[in-house]
Length: 481
Image (tube, rainbow, N blue to C red; front, side, top):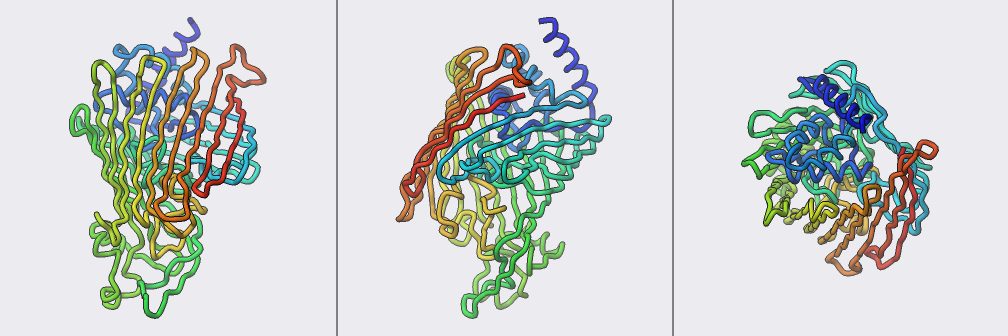
């Protein structure tokens, strides 16, 4: 007990020193489920603190944690201990080893393009702050095929403008099992990002803006669309610009706005003027008709744009806290060229008693979501869509309309055991597909004494039938250090 009290006191002093006007390291994203689950609970019950862009900054989450110190003391103590490695001046934040065996070759949801055939995974992360205004973060995944940098970058600045340069992930959505615009479904790209550590004004304004270069596309269209004479395509690496902002409309309601612009690459040149016109006038800069294309120069169309409007509302009903959230995602403009938009809503019950949490999410992707006439691979990076995992569950060039549902149940079996289960279904609306379903469940147990440095171990089962009616399964065992 004395050791824990000393740790918490030291953590508080360290956080106070490092957070005052300074930069912050990030929490892991889809790599440490136990920590991320408690953070989700925290954000669902705290007031005026919804955060719709991830990864979360450690000092931002620690600041929010202080608001529930007396209302949720058990959550405060648990999360304080879990956050301790991330708010010191430097630390090895996490390490995990996974050994798995699987059938088929199905993409794992939100795991940077890894599949059921990925057998050996080593994950880890560490960071170091050099004063209040500069730091280095190193995190990644190594498997038998490649090394995937997830959060490896340098960061500098101050509380209202932190600059990250390197491999920094981006997730633009209040949803947890998927993100319509930008998620961890595809590999991380190198980027330059600027965002704020502390929210601005009493409206809790947060922003995140980045520019990155994607991997090579198999074909990028040269010139404007020409259905009569045909089009020439050349390989190239397009750029991706992202902008997210959110603000607290009321104590319980937060509104978020996000934009993605995929442009340039290969035969397409883009000037600063083109970019500005595409940003402020997306409807007139994209989706040209045949007659319009004849009036403008061959590179008039900027590229492809996605945007979203999101909300997150929390309250309680008969002492049961809940969080309700939704998203309307748009391609170019509302309605686009062929009504290729997407809609989602979700409900989260963070405390069904102290031991259970339940989350339900539903998404509706309209025809041609993630498709584009300029880029043959659409909104993909290294062959995987950059957003919702459902975008990888159809023929490569089909882009069928689809509907998804996911149900997550987190059960704290005991003080040292957890069971985390997710059930997903997907229905593609065109002929030739079957309704897919899958079960993903993970059991984790803390060790009373470390074994070869391992603090906990567990096992995960992932199985089901895909959209072609074929069965798949994967069994994994893991140890966390």
